Length: 321
Ligand SMILES: Nc1ncnc2c1ncn2[C@@H]1O[C@H](COP(=O)(O)OP(=O)(O)O)[C@@H](O)[C@H]1O
Ligand SMILES: [Mg+2]
Image 1: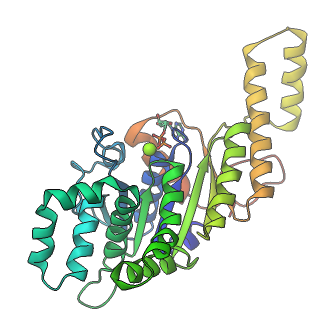
Image 2 (image 1 turned 60 degrees about the vertical axis):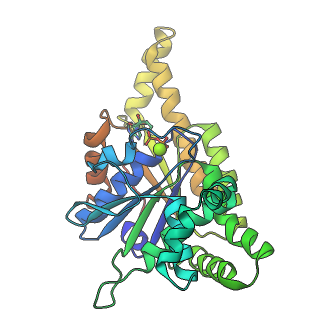
């Protein structure tokens, strides 16, 4: 299943804050690199009124300070922070007859304020820079960045990006903006090129929210690629063992162990609910006792491990291919 994901040109990692989007995006990038892919890992610059500290994504893959210029992190892996301003500059550069005019225009304070004020124009900048990077080729004509993995800051952002081409087309159907909106739209909506990965947690509420997000994303005709159920607790029990533990816990009254068992049950039903309601494959990612780069490495290893032959019954181990 992962190999099919990596055939696309852009993977958009979305989901609620705190579910593990950034961690998963980093691990997915590492896994793809380990399988011989070249990956551009991207994040989005937040607006200037929110403070953006050091980038968690950059830290997780060992990239230096993020910038709107693509930087090489290591063999096969590059990093970029998509910036509305950079995208707007690239756009002006493409539509104005001379590059110097674009640079001059971007130096105009009034224009900059105008571009920064309208959220749609910020999103347009981000989308434009992403398209620009995806379109870039090497001298031999092959893509410079065959696979871009984008860590989206919040669910709202994925939808804003998805809605953008329609919004732009409705106000400016013709001319260069219309043209680039149409181009963006056809790329974003082509399941061979783009796929959204919805990350969630194995609890009832996050699962409900994810199913809603899946519906909203599909309404915008962005292709879903997969669901990602993150932080699934390991189930150490065989069916017999589980029954024995339950008898033991019942006999001894309330116990911490009961909470753990209840969590396992919620994880199991979360998985079942997602599997039967999402129209795409579900990837399960284990909860691991690690953080930061170590967590990313271990998750990447998990993602690239050979898929185990289906065990006789009990197992809930990892990715469903
Ligand atoms: N599979 C996992 N196992 C253990 N901890 C995890 C896992 N995935 C994410 N985390 C932890 O959850 C927290 C939130 O993850 P993060 O990737 O920053 O979420 P998001 O980008 O969605 O806000 C981090 O502290 C991260 O280390
Ligand atoms: Mg994040």
